[in-house]
Amino acid sequence: MTQYPSIKPFLKWAGGKDKLFNQLEIFLPPEIKKGEITNYYEPFLGSGAVFFNLIKQQTFEKVVLSDINEELILVYTVIQNDVEELIQILDQLKSRYLQLSESDKEKFYYDLRTAYNYMRFNINYKKYSNAWIPRAAQMIFLNKTCYNGLYRQNLRGDFNVPFGKNFSPPLYEYDNMLLISSILKKTNILISDFEDILDQVPQDSFVYLDPPYRPISKTARFNDYYKLGFNEKDNDRLMHLLKILNQNGVKFMLNNSFKVNDEYVQKYYSQYNIAFIKANRMMSSIPNKRNKVSEIVITNY
Ligand SMILES: C[S@@+](CC[C@H](N)C(=O)[O-])C[C@H]1O[C@@H](n2cnc3c(N)ncnc32)[C@H](O)[C@@H]1O
Image 1 (cartoon, rainbow, N blue to C red):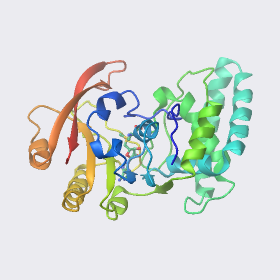
Image 2 (cartoon, rainbow, N blue to C red; image 1 turned 135 degrees about the horizontal axis):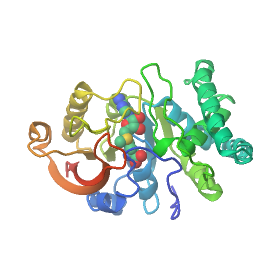
Image 3 (tube, rainbow, N blue to C red; image 1 turned 90 degrees about the vertical axis):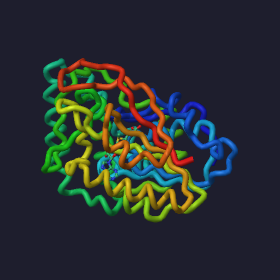
């Protein structure tokens, strides 16, 4: 795989690691820099910030990118297969939106959100089709015009984020989209629960794991990226799989939230290396209450 110095994520994503990559980079296994690791796995892909930063400098023979959120992976798959058609639809959406008054823009957003939620019953997420292309364009449009670039689903699976009052959003950057498309053509992109991916990782691989964070306080926002959420059972499943990866000699790095005196850290991470980084995060349900908080970086090398 060739190198792509200017590539960057194309979506906004809660918990996205683009701004933290400089801090995370320090903890990557040295074998990556030496080109001795040939396979890369990222099973909680989100905006793919770590992959897109890594690929600026590194090459891998095999890359597996996955996430349980089918709407997210649908977008990646469309960029991989039909980027020019996607861009055409994005341009049409943008020019219709830009002509409207501010109140009509809000209405446009909510009408599109309703149609997007309704249309999902017509999409077969297991089989690629032309119907995926306008859906990917709508998802990107909603992502760039919704509140804070959040992706949140209610229990029924409806995307339910309110309008973000972004009246002239850049929906995409042309050169970046083309770069992303060319790189995704050389990757495997899958809708999948992490367990099905981690079950089959070969030895000379590096796995980067960024699961939804455990809430650090009662008012902390839990990341509802997916209708089923991510609970303690999922964390336990993940910890069990880390043990197996470790036994099989696979190198991994995992991020999670941190709170002082957390028994969980002691129980599950004490056998690995634990480091801390500082992140600028939303701390509570009070809007705009951002603070520097510690997060943990777990590695097994
Ligand atoms: C913290 S975000 C990842 C952010 C990403 N590192 C980035 O830079 O944008 C966590 C991701 O895990 C995904 N996820 C939640 N439950 C999952 C599961 N059971 N299996 C795989 N992915 C899951 C969510 O859809 C979400 O995209």
